[in-house]
Image (cartoon, rainbow, N blue to C red; front, top):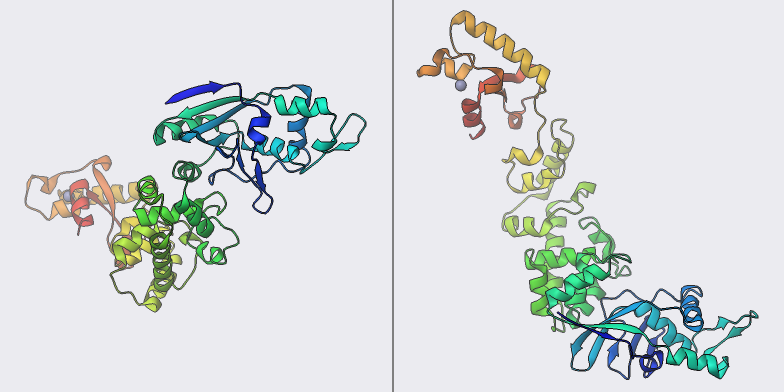
Length: 387
Ligand SMILES: [Zn+2]
């Protein structure tokens, strides 16, 4: 990455061709059209509060440093503001008469009403600007580093920065817009914050099978988001038709992956709902989030449910009882070894060499209590578990 320090750019230079869009709340261009002040990925202008914008102008008038400003070079003689857009938009708006600053006597002064020497002082103020040129990944790394000071950009905000263009613009209109009437429906299945790009992130993860940056890079200059939108809609429609119930545990599940794996299977929503209710009320099911994939996969993979296991006192009691009885009969304390014909027929296993097993499997209604517990040697327990 090449970084060039420029100390010759003045407020006046930046304000040539300064455009502020009142409706979008964004500073758009400056530096005679060569500078994009608020690229898509930047937050909107938030300094227009009569405090932070005024502080910028006060600083300039008092000769305080405005701090470092960073541009990225995006083409020959074309730049984007990477850091500093709030400060730039503040002085740009002041110079173009958008707000007033109180003078020492408490009188509000618009730029045109300032004494000429003060106008000059503002316009001739030199900025400290680093201009950066580099690959996407270099810029991304750099962006991460310089953003440590402010509210850090999250992963998707960074991706939007790196791949900014018509695709990101359209995608944000759909997925980062809290005014979108669909957001409420989506929020049953998607977690996070619309404004902080979490919904967009999810939509991109689903359509790209987890390769978000690759997908964004390939579609950067697309002028439509048809595939992104229709894939997302397909997933949401599929989930909401298979599961007619809406439970809080559904929020944030990897529905894109589940869709890929299971959407070719047929499900009866009523039957699914009945099974869901049954599992939700099952004391032994510890992982409620796992219920969804468990049902989609045909109710076979118990691991997904993290079924309650036998506690240590239960295991110890069962072990002692089993071992005493086995010793009397001179057989193995593993009931399956005891009925076998190999060398382990009479073997007394230590408790650490055994595991607790449901005599009647949990999936067939067997409870996790002492009456349904037996200790098996690890080999037999594993063999039984695999059936
Ligand atoms: Zn055994």
